[in-house]
Length: 554
Image (cartoon, rainbow, N blue to C red):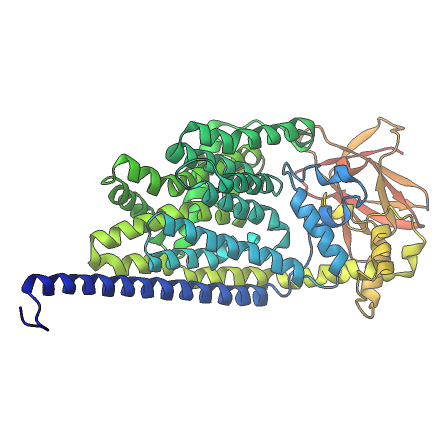
């Protein structure tokens, strides 16, 4: 053969190699572009959520972590918050309080937003490992990064608990999702799983997810390694401390089933936003998973389906656990709460991405439609979070003025340090004027500026009454069904008791002067309301006419 010539076979072989190399380069370039696009979405989401959440402030459950725990009491780190093991969030709040106090909400907001976006990145990693293409993985993970319907877990810093469990649980899942012998990845995964338990009850569901995934992929011994030690640790905590915060409520199977159904349906509707898209996403999930997993042999199925399949089951497990503690008290519709939508969506998205990828590969012509189904809900989700912050911002800022102005009142140093100026909720009732005064002294509570006459009158009334437990001196109690006025001199008290059926709370307002605020006192927080200054003329009434409170003779 003359020098410089190739045979036909040699030429064909080289051409195939060149085409293969070109294809791989194209695929790699596409994957890099998809990853870059996702990073861009994450950066944009970070900026967007921080801007929209800029007027949020501390409220409700956050006061337990800030004011309701004793810094020097190690045991307080392990006592539950509303059934949840919350050691990591408590430590996070203590650190943020020490560094920033209540001077700004931004650092607290940054932590919860970063955890949310980290969960989005980990979900994309789960999708890619399950064989989903780079662009569909980016679309599905971007939907979660911009999932404004989960606003409670995005702009309320308290939800670092739920988000922490989700992030640590996904980390555990990814570290355990491999073939072969137990190695360092497994031990690191177990540590991550333990950290997830220390964040919230979502950690329990995530441990079950990891157990199911490893059972399918690696067998029962590895599954036991990843679940039994963590399960025993959680049970030990539950028996010793956790159940003290648990109120056992009767719940029917029908209620629980409806809670799950409502939660799943609401999550898919929230992903789609546009009417009918949620149903189409559900159909896509079922059809796509059949297409994706049916042709695989057993070994391929174990590798590809273990993680997304376990997460999909985990979404139902999470709703079952949540419904067991909430459905009987708050009703099945409470499954629509944003924090539940956030977790259910996170657990369902990897399987949905697998399904979408299978449909797009099977019928190329449908690929744009599949992609559109995953992203069409993003604008609506952004709008939903924006609407939430618009609704709450004014109230948040008004409440901020109340909290920050209370310790600046001259009367604040003259009343007992144990006075609770906001007894309206169990957690806000943990704010005492002593804690606020200490915050001012340490520089952790900023000066709110000039206090106007209305604020001064309302704050004075807030600091005039103290709720506590006193020895019962009378059994003469009657339901309070209408408003009555009562004059209280300093040191005199009102005695209340919870009604045996449909017990409610007592509403107390000023019947004279300029104060317009009304305080709500719950009998479970104390049976006596003591005037720490006076004389006062107060107006008493039920906080809700359908839920009465008993007013007792002093």
